[in-house]
Image 1: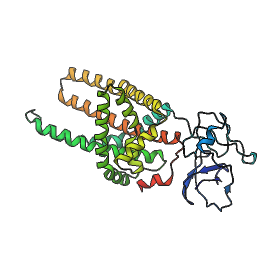
Image 2: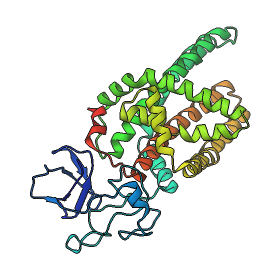
Image 3: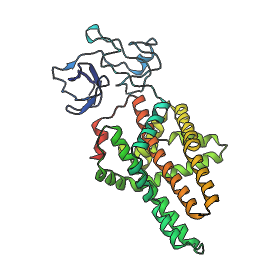
Image 4: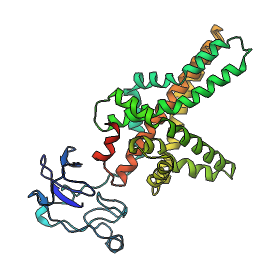
Length: 339
């Protein structure tokens, strides 16, 4: 159902699609949610219909008071043209409820990634350490270095557990980005339910990206961009393996260069600001004190935790940014996965 109604909190007009009466819609003016009314409700506003993709192409640049590079909530075909002008009685398009979908911002994704990683450093770090337990345990059993097989098994189990901890971090981060208090019981249940699909997805994505890099490098870059948000697509939208991969590619379409920009910025910032200094500090400590393998294990574990936490949180922030840039604002059907 495509309708427009006034926000009960601030009075601006909210236009929505695909919502049944009673489902929450987000007002982009005041930031509060309001239940979608029935079509017969007096709060429903009669506005001009959204043009088809063919009609939208005929609109002049900036129609509706926006530039040709912007998109608007309610455009199912993803058209970049502005909506038809709003009648005077409904106010200025810039301040009314015809809310402009925000432009994709790499800096905003990075800011959210660092903010949420720091805010959840302790719980996310502990979650990440769970996947390293098999390595610690098997490393202790083979401390003399004579049983390589035990260490290999430990690393394999750790790799299988990593998608579980990643899923938990993604679920918890998305709840925070929704303004909800984290329910760790629900987070664990969600992670367990999506664990095996995420294991298969990680294997397939790794194979595809690796093959792409072997084939003249460029296909690997395109694959990395296409599957940048496959994890959040699987966790948040509760999709299957193939659907999660398709969904990630769909969200990245139209924003590939910006997704690549985020990925490059992430590697640069995490590498130069966090990982490299950490390695240098502990390397110097190891040489001076002679503690050897213990300090190196701490370095490796710290790097693994930092990379897993920031990559999972960053992918979730990127996923939400892509959805917002496409005009897909978070609605109740996407929150039900955490209920």
